[in-house]
Length: 337
Image 1: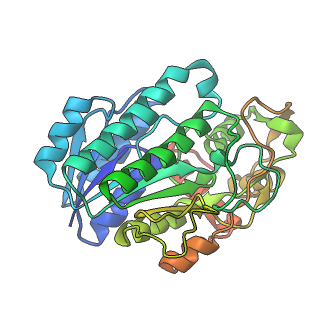
Image 2 (image 1 turned 60 degrees about the vertical axis):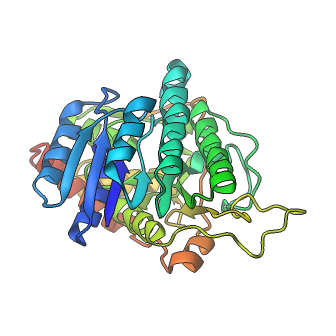
């Protein structure tokens, strides 16, 4: 089994590659190693992957159509797991073109690669942000997502629409996974767990938006990867229950599926911070701020459909996940307790 994983130097990408390699798959990892955040972390992730037999790295950019067609033509991949993207909600306020280039144009190039060089399945990263300001919790895949409140969310919704088009026209089995607040070892430096851990270790105040009145469905990285791999192993199929008179946006009469993947146990942000303080053995200084543009006050996932499809439901307790994250953080950054 030869699998292309885009975004291999990224947080979820690296862990996904490791999981596939551990079970004996041949993995081609692709990344452009951009400077959105510190390259040294990406280099360290790739160094870890390079130690594993069966891994080959391609330094390439999904935005380059000609380059991607050549990679697909030469690669002859059995499956594709597409995790490369321009992430971050707040960054999109100042750098909108980066999101359209990477998340829309880049995804089109992936779809075209799968069209002209057929694969068993295409699994790709969507996001819980597509639910926008939806007020009814938990979020369910059948809900309307017509009101994204960030450009990042809009590009992820566009990915789902583009995937359906290619599934319908060219019968490419596509499955989108709406990730909910992923955290854990090797996490992104721009996300709250890493920002908080760094500030606490340096004795600086942490910024807490919406005055701390936030609810997040924090999902541990191992659970995310387990879901990604299981979904990749089970290509999307047309759903015989699909009703075009009352269309469910998560299924289709084409080989197309959408699933939430979250812990389904949303946690108050202040409780997450308390768990982080306990694991680090230090109390955080706190700087309470108003809600930021593009943020949502709460996320919560209904993962019934995912469990029904692949027999898996994320379940790592927040205390366990935070302890594992802090243990890695202290070792990687050589921080004494």
